[in-house]
Image (cartoon, rainbow over all chains, first blue to last red; front, side, top):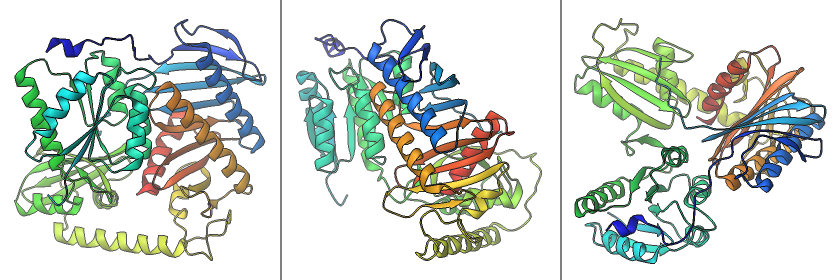
Length: 100
Length: 364
């Protein structure tokens, strides 16, 4: 039965990205500490999404200098920097807080 | 059982599919078992017919199990899900649980493990999922039923009840409710707040005999009072939802469902975004409601798509901290989304905490 625990192909689960990077006002990555195994396209996508949210907020008159997007097991924290942003990526295990 | 259960089994390994299909078909409830060798096909099958249970592998090419689960959680929040994988990494286990899976099973390697797996699936299928709420672990019963059960049996226990990010406790001593507590209230107020939650999880903990009695009313009286308060509140909500007062972007009248939410500390504005985009918006304290609504919808859509692409799990909330004001945005598939503005002096953790409470109250 042990054979069922082995995959015959190279399908690997993707880890969540971690690290930080900065983007310019167009969402292009300027500098990054994100590990190399994270596809560039993923980093760019995160950067562009963050910049788009920050710019949209400004236009809608709810401008913010810091943004936090909390997912089930991942957190994106972004701080605006002269039109661009510095973005922190933190994979996070779910936490259960017992009632006080 | 009124109808036959239908299970969808997803794995890219044909041998595994064949084996587990045979195993599941032999369950006492004789479920119908459909198989899919890819995530994309599984989603297409789920779109085309209703299933009782999804059993999926994690490591699959193109669309992996976590991506499948992320989509399933968003599109079919009531579908029971099980991960069946050979991946042992705790990170993936955590991520799967963050996506709301009911169980995480390592692929069986002995006859005993196969038997255990079958027993668990059979037990899971035996529990009907109620679309209209109910408490996990006792889904055909309401919280009132549960409390009555504890009181009638003269039990002593502490009920821990949680709904999303908020939780509460009810102390039962010798069949009487002696106290309740939530993050915002204690005593009768807390009891009423807990009773307004439609669904959630509960846990029965050992009694705390030394806990001081703060509620003196009988449990029957308490339940009656709470039911009355809930009815009145629902009545107000219904009248606030009539077309005359639900004009797009119109400020909420005093009896609006939003008015009680505005009483939370630091709230500057409130904006509801119904799940049906054509339904009217409701706002409180906001001048450019349409503009903010368009941005909030676009933000949520973009960040949800991003979460799906990277397999980050469901979007819990988005928060912005500004010099003029802070804001937070949170939503669920059934009710829609809620955007709340806070005064800029409110600390970040307070914004997060208050948003959780406001959202829970609104979604209830």
